[in-house]
Image (cartoon, rainbow, N blue to C red; front, side):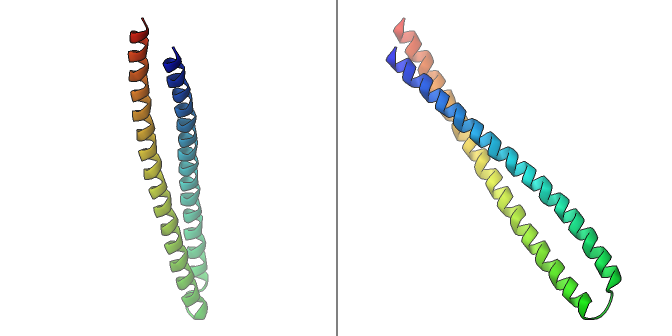
Length: 113
Protein backbone atom coordinates (compact mmCIF):
# COMPACT_ATOMS: atom_id res chain seq x y z
CA UNK A 1 0.00 0.00 0.00
CA UNK A 2 2.88 2.35 0.78
CA UNK A 3 4.18 1.89 -2.75
CA UNK A 4 0.82 3.00 -4.16
CA UNK A 5 0.93 6.15 -2.04
CA UNK A 6 4.40 7.00 -3.32
CA UNK A 7 3.28 6.44 -6.90
CA UNK A 8 0.16 8.56 -6.39
CA UNK A 9 2.30 11.38 -4.94
CA UNK A 10 4.56 11.07 -7.97
CA UNK A 11 1.53 11.35 -10.25
CA UNK A 12 0.41 14.46 -8.38
CA UNK A 13 3.85 16.02 -8.80
CA UNK A 14 3.81 15.19 -12.50
CA UNK A 15 0.39 16.77 -12.88
CA UNK A 16 1.73 20.00 -11.36
CA UNK A 17 4.74 19.95 -13.68
CA UNK A 18 2.50 19.30 -16.69
CA UNK A 19 0.29 22.21 -15.66
CA UNK A 20 3.35 24.45 -15.40
CA UNK A 21 4.54 23.39 -18.87
CA UNK A 22 1.06 23.94 -20.33
CA UNK A 23 0.90 27.45 -18.88
CA UNK A 24 4.39 28.25 -20.15
CA UNK A 25 3.42 26.97 -23.61
CA UNK A 26 0.30 29.17 -23.60
CA UNK A 27 2.36 32.20 -22.54
CA UNK A 28 4.76 31.44 -25.37
CA UNK A 29 1.91 31.27 -27.89
CA UNK A 30 0.44 34.53 -26.59
CA UNK A 31 3.83 36.22 -26.82
CA UNK A 32 4.26 35.01 -30.40
CA UNK A 33 0.83 36.35 -31.33
CA UNK A 34 1.65 39.71 -29.72
CA UNK A 35 4.97 39.81 -31.56
CA UNK A 36 3.25 39.16 -34.89
CA UNK A 37 0.77 41.96 -34.20
CA UNK A 38 3.65 44.24 -33.24
CA UNK A 39 5.48 43.36 -36.47
CA UNK A 40 2.38 44.14 -38.52
CA UNK A 41 2.03 47.55 -36.86
CA UNK A 42 5.77 48.21 -37.21
CA UNK A 43 5.62 47.45 -40.93
CA UNK A 44 2.70 49.86 -41.37
CA UNK A 45 4.53 52.58 -39.45
CA UNK A 46 7.73 52.19 -41.45
CA UNK A 47 5.76 52.18 -44.69
CA UNK A 48 4.10 55.47 -43.74
CA UNK A 49 7.43 56.97 -42.68
CA UNK A 50 9.07 55.78 -45.90
CA UNK A 51 6.34 57.46 -47.94
CA UNK A 52 6.87 60.67 -45.97
CA UNK A 53 10.67 60.63 -46.18
CA UNK A 54 11.36 59.20 -49.62
CA UNK A 55 14.80 60.74 -50.01
CA UNK A 56 17.55 62.22 -47.93
CA UNK A 57 19.25 61.41 -44.68
CA UNK A 58 16.03 60.49 -42.89
CA UNK A 59 15.23 57.91 -45.57
CA UNK A 60 18.59 56.21 -45.01
CA UNK A 61 18.12 56.30 -41.23
CA UNK A 62 14.67 54.74 -41.58
CA UNK A 63 16.06 51.93 -43.73
CA UNK A 64 18.74 51.18 -41.14
CA UNK A 65 16.28 51.30 -38.26
CA UNK A 66 13.79 49.11 -40.12
CA UNK A 67 16.54 46.56 -40.81
CA UNK A 68 17.58 46.53 -37.14
CA UNK A 69 14.03 46.13 -35.86
CA UNK A 70 13.35 43.30 -38.33
CA UNK A 71 16.52 41.54 -37.25
CA UNK A 72 15.63 41.93 -33.59
CA UNK A 73 12.11 40.63 -34.27
CA UNK A 74 13.57 37.61 -36.06
CA UNK A 75 15.82 36.89 -33.09
CA UNK A 76 12.80 37.03 -30.78
CA UNK A 77 10.84 34.67 -33.05
CA UNK A 78 13.74 32.22 -33.06
CA UNK A 79 13.96 32.31 -29.27
CA UNK A 80 10.23 31.75 -28.97
CA UNK A 81 10.35 28.80 -31.39
CA UNK A 82 13.29 27.32 -29.51
CA UNK A 83 11.40 27.72 -26.25
CA UNK A 84 8.35 26.08 -27.83
CA UNK A 85 10.44 23.09 -28.93
CA UNK A 86 11.89 22.73 -25.43
CA UNK A 87 8.42 22.88 -23.91
CA UNK A 88 7.12 20.24 -26.33
CA UNK A 89 10.06 18.01 -25.47
CA UNK A 90 9.46 18.54 -21.74
CA UNK A 91 5.75 17.75 -22.20
CA UNK A 92 6.57 14.48 -24.00
CA UNK A 93 9.02 13.52 -21.25
CA UNK A 94 6.43 14.20 -18.56
CA UNK A 95 3.81 12.19 -20.45
CA UNK A 96 6.21 9.25 -20.70
CA UNK A 97 6.94 9.49 -16.97
CA UNK A 98 3.22 9.60 -16.27
CA UNK A 99 2.58 6.49 -18.37
CA UNK A 100 5.38 4.68 -16.54
CA UNK A 101 3.92 5.61 -13.15
CA UNK A 102 0.47 4.41 -14.22
CA UNK A 103 2.00 1.08 -15.27
CA UNK A 104 3.77 0.81 -11.92
CA UNK A 105 0.55 1.66 -10.08
CA UNK A 106 -1.41 -1.03 -11.96
CA UNK A 107 1.31 -3.56 -11.22
CA UNK A 108 1.46 -2.58 -7.53
CA UNK A 109 -2.33 -2.76 -7.24
CA UNK A 110 -2.35 -6.24 -8.78
CA UNK A 111 0.40 -7.40 -6.42
CA UNK A 112 -1.49 -6.00 -3.41
CA UNK A 113 -4.51 -8.19 -4.20
